[in-house]
Length: 370
Image (cartoon, rainbow, N blue to C red; front, side, top):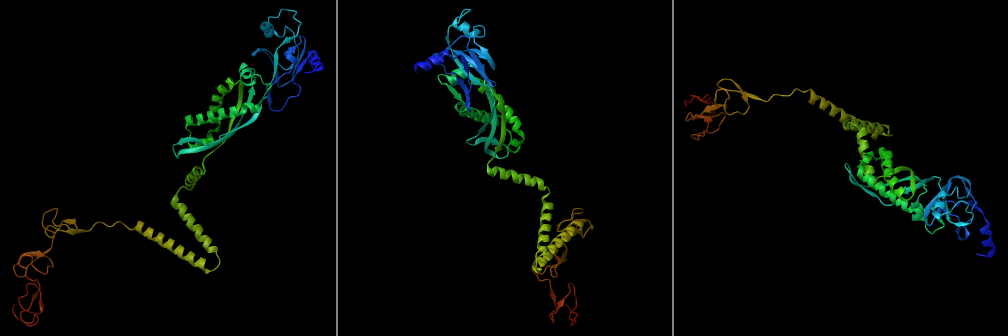
């Protein structure tokens, strides 16, 4: 630095951050050899705070306004320096201007999908985005952690780390809350409050205050959204049979409106089929149920299920019997041969061979005795 520049800096007694640079959160006032004259003017503009730092330790803090620097309004620094009343010599101290206005609409989003276990769809991957706002606090953590030997601290310097913390807290909350995928859209406010609770502590350790946190949108994979749409459609349809009938009626109407006889003929066929089906269903519904067939016992005339072999009342055989034409043994009705003697059960005339009725003694054709 030249002689005149050095001389000019030594005699300047106004300390201020006049030309704020967009994006700069903390600015260190540059002064030759950090020497400040007693009774210098300190100008703090709205949205700023001025902080005097002595050997890395925050001393006195000044609110917006114009301040004359004396030992009376620098009590902490005077104590640290061991000044006595009436001290007038220049002193060394670092002065930082901190922008205390809200940093609004800072964007966040998940660069990679967040895995979540869902009771309806199993493992799902979701993405999310939103915004948050914060403010720089006057804390030693901010000065020591972020500023150090640098002259300025910008929003870009810290917001990369902030976004990482935001996404980590969001993923944590989503896993802990176990909200079903179908209900996520109705829980944005609750998710935002849960994430804010975690971020308050984290940002406080960095010398920042979280002012707001908002979940703008949570996006599910395309296949999960399709499944959700199908489930919603099924719920809206309600009765599937009525919906099918409605679709059929709509199809018939569209075909009837087509030009030419083809559509009309097809409509007639479809209506006929539907009417036939309806009539058939009505007949089936109106037809009384038939009772199972029964058979009467040949002995006691009691009703028994068809094909019963013995009567449930008297125990008599339910099978109708005849007598063998030769050995007179009982055989099933209409048997052609006797199961006992093997004789054919059809009688024929000895003379003319005509078929005779069972028990005939004479042939009705030739009169021959049998």
